[in-house]
Length: 316
Image 1 (cartoon, rainbow, N blue to C red):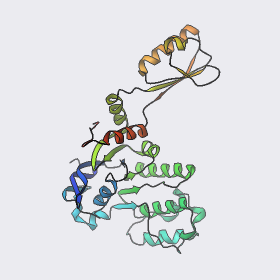
Image 2: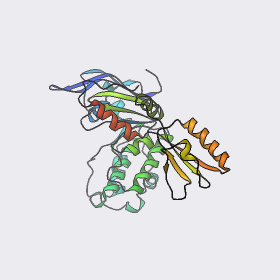
Image 3: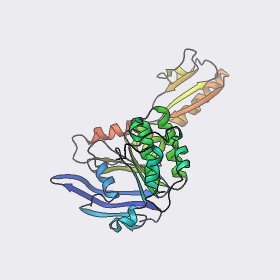
Image 4: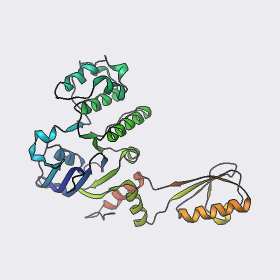
């Protein structure tokens, strides 16, 4: 077990009656990184979080937080900040009063004015919790999770119900927390969110970890397994007449014949041929943009693979 890991799960199993919720789950969350835990409904994500937080005990295996066994209980859990999908707050307290109350539970706490500014809740500081919009309430939930200056922050679907602006603002807040040294574990159903935020992620299906790796390595392994290749978007400075000779299936993206998409091709080969075309026609290549397989595409493919199978074939 590396000392650089904030969370380590070793051979975790959990059974409810005849239902095996987790089967030999191994996870390593590196200190100071954002770790994504993804999976379809019923995959074991919530049970895994409950075990990390000490709310449930595994039937077998070991859990360590910052090198300490989770059985140390309170000493370990004081290092955790938690944002659940639904957090019980006092409806008649204001935003500021809520943060003041939770700050009083800790010896050291996040400066409230600084926290309000970071979460963009200054204009709602005197508003009662019951009068907050859904997005404002979720921001306050995040503030409550942050108030105790946790070393580990667990965020369960943090931006569900957010408008696009608030969502991106919160993503930037989460990244700032990571950059300040906070370790973050996040569950989400929003694949763009996971792809944007996570340094590393694991995907659970049927209680088993089928992927646990850095984002780019996940994509590389997926592309190799399914024989996928990157798509390339080329932007010429002027219209090209020769591209269809080299790439008959190229898709024209504008009426002027300057922007083209070439699907599932070797990037190095495409780049070389595009520059040869440009040289022949004496035109400039303004941009070449590579489109990798999206995390959503990978996720859907994995779930499809798991249907009707006794065991999902691992990518890594």
